[in-house]
Length: 195
Image (cartoon, rainbow, N blue to C red; front, side, top):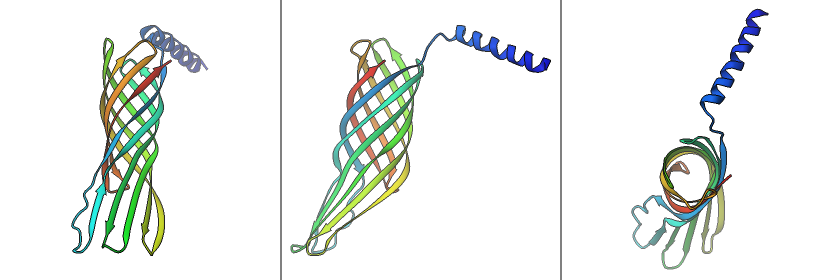
């Protein structure tokens, strides 16, 4: 009984000491960004008699919320749409079109270096990305399929505090092994609302 009482007193003292040593209270933020994605993938050799093109750039965006654990460390939760990868091919008679659309939910650990009104940050993340394939071939019909993969990401960026509540943010991120095959780079700019 005495050991339990001493342990409870020690925990209470440590809690009071920690509160005095670290007056910083976690606060949250909401964010939204839009930009461009580019898949790190190539078309490969095209068979004779076939012409093909690959569009690996598209509009991408993300929205989410974060919580600052201290002035230098935060955790973010986000929804990201990495855009669409499109391939087109034809033999002069039939036409093939295939698309891969990737999007999902994830979390980031963010390290920040505050510099007055500016801030530099780096992040690592883990996301469940769903990729939906759609294909259509003239005279043969169409089909679709989906796949979910856990992917990692990393990124760097900078922010500028317009005022106490709003910041402008620009960043580069790489999502690795999307659909288990290729990387997707995302350049974006957006707003952050601090509360």
